[in-house]
Length: 590
Image 1 (cartoon, one colour):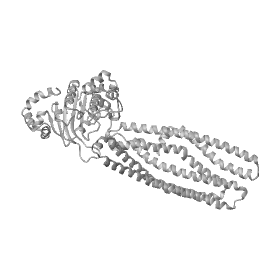
Image 2 (tube, one colour):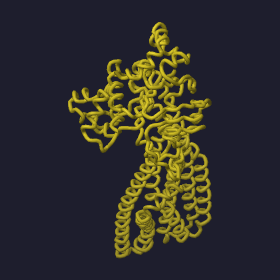
Image 3 (cartoon, helix red, strand yellow):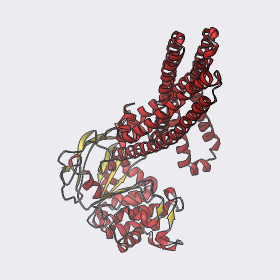
Image 4 (tube, one colour):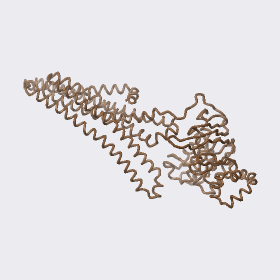
């Protein structure tokens, strides 16, 4: 509950005002039976209409004050719970933004979404209930017990037994319910994960007619959630009736002990029975709120896990701010993803001179994307170090480093909004002409202007109203607007036809002169005329050099070439490697 108290302290005055009104409401409820007993014992018994009218008017005034207090209490409680919910979501979202990809991978996006939405809602409901009911229930319960003992002292032993039994039942409820409600939230995580995976892959699911398989996965996750909820609800179904039974048994005992009560004090007996009903109501309220508290405790623990998560990547105390030109060195670099059994990169040693274009090729899973992800510090190397312009990337100011790098990922990611708004992600200060020029270089200007609203065309989530190739070109244009010193292209032309890819690469060569380009591709024709080619396999460097050098000295590269272009041309290319070395680089992009 430390998390809840931490946020309640920020709004302590609203909480105290709400609690004050809640106390007034509880006192008003407690006074009603007492004045009713006065009406019966003093007014009705003595046939004193004046006293009946007086006590009736007082009861009416107390009821009005209680109603006003209830309205104000609800208003302040709702306001406080909503403000705290907003602050919790803001803080979770802000902390997630600061986390490294390693942290995100471990926490899992689906689980983070559940914590921002469902878990925060659980805490909101508990805080609202705390300020509306939880504080009122003990006041009502204790006050009713005291008044019962004052009016009928012989009931004290009965009340003590009832309280002991009820307390034991509530404690058992907490012990049994807490792990079950924690399991409910974890099963909700799993259901959200299945749903999110289906929605993000709906085209593939439909293409392979895999709706039945996905339905089975969803049914299984939904069934597990239902079973977990049933188990948790069963706890409430068992304990709350027992609590009610205990209090109702106390009412029976009260009537039994009071069977010889003097008839002139029948009003007191009525009040005592009424107060026992208040005790029953209060104990049931406490049980319900404690059940909510058990849920809230499980949710608070999950939220605290995110809020207390610290970035896996440590920031330097005195960050370096070199002038980045794009010179990159990998020194004995190895890397293993969190939870993975095997290394993704193994002892990488390469030097990429500034201003060079490096084509990176290799089989799927060879570590190409992992390699380039280490340059902008999406992840940190497990062993060795990466130098940019002679400085270890872990010591460079992160903002400076990432501003100098533009990344076009393998999967084009666009955001809801206009095309122009998406392009300005590259640089919010870019002028319109700079944006148009970047779009022309990426061969995106033509189809953008052909759209109904041109650059003001709105995109759906993920750019769903664009084709795969169009999304890739918009993503590329967004990166070019930044005018980066290091440009990372992670297979970002895979959806383009050969002619469009040729035009894009030629434009890059012309417009990005001086930038270091890391060009990942599965196409040998895309990388073969790069200044340098890096061939990756099984997380290791299999070859590093020009096309002709790799054709002669790298078996894996030669196999890739032969599989895509043909063994005959491969032989001819090997025989003519010297001529290629002289002309290949200059012809790249023509």
